[in-house]
Image: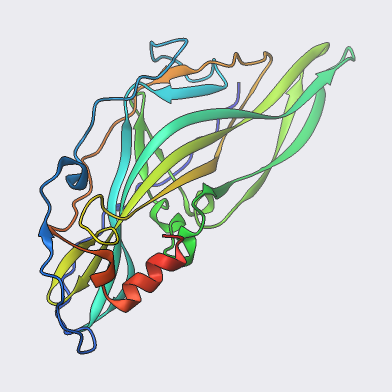
Length: 278
């Protein structure tokens, strides 16, 4: 079995910035509402019941799919969307959950000869927003993956730039024994990003509420797949699974203390939300 694990640990949390200004002379038309409901505070909820055929975490090379044993929030951070010093700013508050780890079988070699054979194969890393890709119009979601580090079964996986904002193609050589079959598997991480928004204007930060009200907060949900720089070869076909994995969870991202109705946010903020399909 061959395994390639790479990555570097990076800073995944952004600081909070206060912008004081009059937003082009606009007047405050909405006193706002304090965040009081559990849903808007984005507190933890009971773990989702997951149908796992093998509930005991162990090696991660037995099944095609592995799922966390609990709701695994692996990243929580505040990302700048735009900042106009002295005027206004907008941020995305990201809570990221690992939904599954997949071993994707890309190729199989069968050696029908009586001598060891060599085969070459090229695989490529990538990040793809499969649902909610409109968010990339308003913010660089891939950049929030660069340097992100997550704990899985007691080990750390850190995501490189070529797994998040760029791609990399690697060519490997595989030896296949006589009369043997070998499969090549590349690891894919499936994430769910839940993003709410903050408009920094009129001297303070405001969560973006819905049209005509204050709750629930305006939210964008994205599904993201990362084809990682991790692979292994096996002389067996992996069972479907899913198996279980233990994933370290981080605390929920902090939102603003007050919320404004969608119609009472700044024009620029409303335009940016609209461009992201909200």
